[in-house]
Length: 250
Image (cartoon, rainbow, N blue to C red; front, side, top):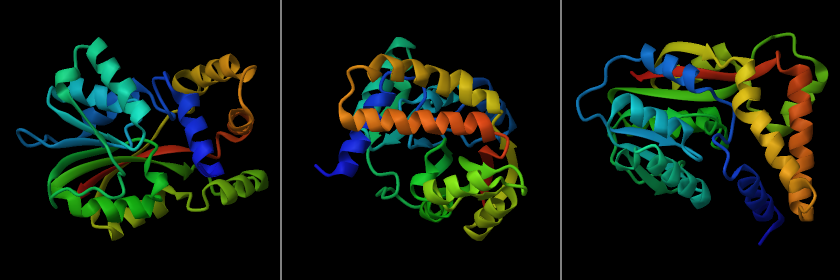
């Protein structure tokens, strides 16, 4: 196993049992859903990079139809399945262990594509280009992406993101990328900063504290890196955040 593989395993283990593997907010997600155009009957709805399925469960509840939830990490899908059973939604959740960047699905088959905090794995542009052929005519995509919220970016923030994710862009640049990939932009909505704390960082900090003492060196390094990321957001969180891009297959 490579160092990278060990790091990925440690990251998965760190996020096991948490409701979310990235920033999000259930009431914000429902607000986004309330803005979407009506879907066709028996719509094919997917959650790509679903993690433990916070989004997939909201979709299942909202639409009362089968949600196909895709993630490469089996432990997260196991968490989703047990959570779905606990909420009485297991009959509406179909988990698929797969690479969301390489889905062997029929073209023009997705009516609603939902992806929270996962597109960056393919880059936003890469995700748009990869997923666009899968969209049904007038299909809707809701994709969240880490985004600049200001043009006056502090130097430490620029340096941090140049290393972490050099493809980070402004809302207007990302909207242009969506247009170039064959989507109409219906709207762009910023996830409130408080959602990072309430539903992600605060529970994650508790989990890190529980693991810290007995953590192996790789886990220790991942915890330290995550501590630094949290402190960084606390200082500079008004410069960047997640924006949700509401898109329609043009």
